[in-house]
Structures are given as C-alpha cells and as structure tokens.
Length: 317
Ligand SMILES: [Zn+2]
Image (cartoon, rainbow, N blue to C red):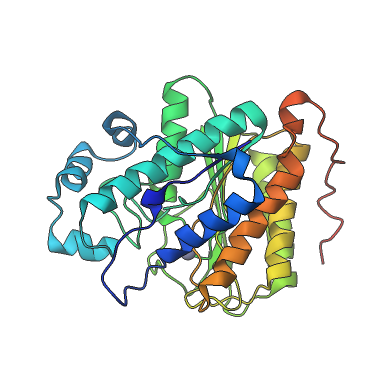
C-alpha cells in the first residue's frame, strides 16, 4: 500500500490562524520514520477531475483567485496560490490512495477528508471535496461502480452528503457531534448524531451498529474512510471524549471489518485540533500504523489476508 503526502500540505497562514497547518509537516516526519519506503508524492487533481464534482465556475474562481471575501471567509483561508496547490494535491492524493486501495487493499492520504466542501462553495477549511472527486473520477474511468464514505470525523460530512445525495451508486455514513459544526446538517445515507461528552464505550457501540447497517444495505467496490482525530477528548473543536485507545479501537474495527469483507479502503486524515498538536499527530500516526499492520504485506490483494472475520456483535455493549 502507498501513503501519499506533499510538502504543499503545509499552508502558510497568518499568525494565530486556527487551522493546524504544522500538523501536516509533523505527521509527514512521523510517517517517514514509520514507513519511508511507502511514501509517495501525489499528483495534483486536474480541472477535469475537479469539475466532475464541483461547479466549473467555482473551480475557475478558486484557481484564478476570483473568490470574493465572503467565499474566502466561509472557507476560512485567505486565497493564495499555495491554497490552490494544497487543495489540488490533497484531492489528487485521495484519488491516488483509492487507486492504491484497489490494487493493494489500502491507500492513505496524509491530508484530505475535506468533507465540508460543497459543489459550488467551500467551507470549514475545505476547498475541494477530495472523497467525491476521487469517487467520480474512478467511476468515470470505469474502475468502480459503487463507493462508500465512512466519515468518522467529529463534524458531519455535509458537503459529501449533499454532493452524493440521491445517488444509488454511493453510500455516505457519518458519525458526528449533534451540537457541533455544521449547524445546518445535510442528510447522509446514514447519520448517527452523538451527544457532547460521548466516550469510548458509547461511541464504539454506535459505530459497530452503524457500520453493520451500512454494509447490510450497500456493498461497495471501494470505501473512503475519514479517520478524523477530532473526536479526541483533548480536541479544541471536538466536544466528544474519546481516548487515544478508543480511537485506535475505532480504526482497528473499521479497517478489520473492511478487510474481512474484502473491501479496499482509502484513508484520509480529516480533522484534528488537539490543544497539543502532537496529540493529533499521535492519533493520525496510530491510524497509519494499524493500517500498515493489516495491509503492510499487500495481503488483501494477494488473497493471503490472515485476518479472521470480524464478528460485529462481539464487543457491542
Ligand atoms: Zn472535523
């Protein structure tokens, strides 16, 4: 499996900006010690790829710097050529991670998960919707028919849900904080709303039930997993109370379940705003370590996957 990362993920921003840009450099360094031989530089998403998901006039405004002040405020970044490059490379990396997943069982983007980006506008630090761009491109190429998005970032994947709404070839699952951003939620195929302060046990129980329902209803050719680090108890924006162990159990459950069902998985990092940035990096790095443990030998693609089938009820409370 391949892990995609770019130096362009580190966006230069004004001092005091809330977006944790240094997280991406720290995560890149951490993964370079974990699995340097698996790291790859992604290609940027092209205009054709972006316009399968986004309105052409929106893509043109982003690329040319014609976004007005309100559109930039909604995104949360001041426009810059670096912002465009970051957004293109991140979308390209999730597409590349999907290609790796189809070939080797798994692929990872060390950014991505920009799920608040809608067809015609960006929001909440999200410019282009990388998951939707990847799905639409693979469908257009005839590589896949059906795709599932498993969005476990603490915020609802409203942009993804809206873009893929009413489409029988896609299934969107989102577990998120009921009282958290976005305050006007979209309708995913399956939404699970969690109360403030939800901890490991209640979260994992809800996840087990939701993923079982999703996979009973829909058999995907590929899944994109948004492994947000922001359900963490120490996250500044999360409002939930998962521990690092709880988040590791979450990742293991999702990745083992998909491996047991022979569903290729691309992983995007999504959010993570811990007061100490190293905590978010720890959580993301653990996701990658778990994926390497399951897929490190390309076991899924070669049919040598040694994992037992996951029994979904075994740890339900
Ligand atoms: Zn988030």
